[in-house]
Image (cartoon, rainbow over all chains, first blue to last red; front, side, top):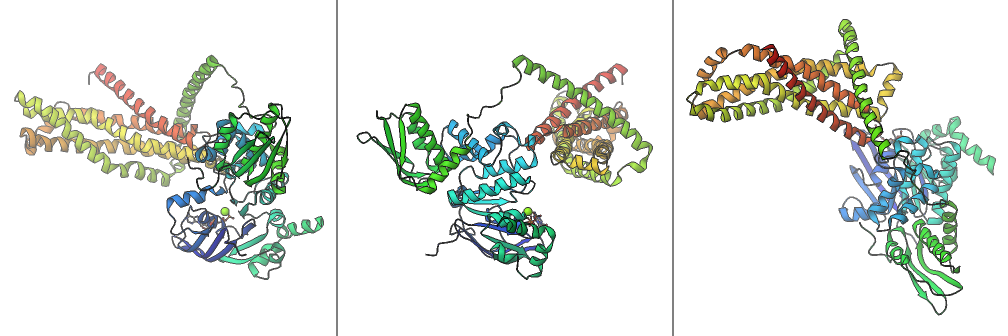
Length: 259
Length: 378
Ligand SMILES: Nc1ncnc2c1ncn2[C@@H]1O[C@H](COP(=O)(O)OP(=O)(O)OP(=O)(O)O)[C@@H](O)[C@H]1O
Ligand SMILES: [Mg+2]
């Protein structure tokens, strides 16, 4: 049985002003897979995520989410799709006027009619799931460290238990312990909840540990989309140079050390 | 509010005879609210142990797992024992995950550290501190301004001209139009009265004195406070939020020198010029209206203008007030920008304060000028 992929990007082209960011990006993400996108800075990873999140309209090409073509979508269907996915932004993007708890509760208050206690308990659970201590719940975003902001943003993305999670560099700026905790969380969400995850990351440990497949974005298209073992041996010059640096090798070695 | 309508709601059926509770439907966050409401007034059958038949649960997410946990908690509180039957392994794992992670006690907001009276006192002392902060800021600004004026090489000319353009030049159209309208209004209102006494020609005095001495400087300052003072506060405030101000400091650039001094100088230069233009436009508006309503033709009007009592002095006093207004607007706008702490909402709040406060202070200053001038007898 071939199922419709959760995300299918075909022939995507994005132009901002005169610069062409994507030119013929193709990508498919199947249900219950964790797919990472890697590539140099400015390769257009965040832009691709924003296009999938319906925040930015591509210049040409097609994006299908849960089998729905985004090009001709009406606002009502778009709202329905938005409720099925959670997005975490590179800079967190928590609302500065709300506490962490209220930030996480916001989607719940907007989209469900659960009682206030239930919403608070659910938001508290999400905050605990991402590994934040309970005391942070009543802090404002400005009172958090960079890594705590990341996790709070992750908790908000998880608020509605979305089927699809879009994460922009979830582990960047985290200490190794918390980065590993986020990796574990992604893995358990995938296993327990059957989540599909699309994430942008440069973190070699995450790439090796949690991904099913990794797409390498370079030269304005997806150069390869493969399992990490295969991708790291890819002879394409851009990919090779990415993995040749010491940092690029590190993840693999630690992977081997574990086995 | 938009919950699922197409999917099944989470639900349960109590079978009292067999001491069994059948759980059914989608236990998804978006499909829980009905069951949650029902659970609150649920009456459980009197049995020693209940069987929770979970085989009918189609889907379960963390929200559903939480509700399931609450359900078991509720049973325990009612003194009932329970066990699951037919719970899928993946659901079991999820339930375990949630049970492990759920915070031990409900989250309580930290107690407010101050009582009512203490809060009032704290707020007042904050206002007082703000006031002292403003004074300190003004003092620092003036001393930097002195340094800048003595060493013109340290003035950021580029920024200065940018500020003159955005705060002065681009204000010309809106200010010109509004001044014209003010002239029209004064001429119309005054003209009707003067016409009754046959003193038509004094419309020239009325317009020249009221607009040039009072209305034009005040209107200009108020419009600039709304347009430019708010922009100062928003710009500096946003830079504060995004840590650009701190970045400038670490690079070794004094934010005062780069951001504030050019704004202050630009406004002190452009506000008098804007006032001058407002003078011209409002007199023009008055002239047009006088011609139309009470038959004082433009050539008569222009003839009379130089003979208006103390016209030149009024003009100088009016334009002379402008640099003072400029200092107030730039000072308040920049100070409020630097006061921003936190996020976007703080930027909005301080921008509002900057506009309200600078307009307030401009009007107060204008009143003080009036009192002072009348005391001097000019
Ligand atoms: N609003 C914009 N206007 C113009 N160009 C933009 C805009 N947003 C992004 N770009 C350009 O698009 C390109 C891709 O940006 P994007 O943010 O997607 O990079 P990225 O792959 O996420 O990089 P990083 O790993 O550093 O986050 C960059 O070259 C950037 O300069
Ligand atoms: Mg990015």
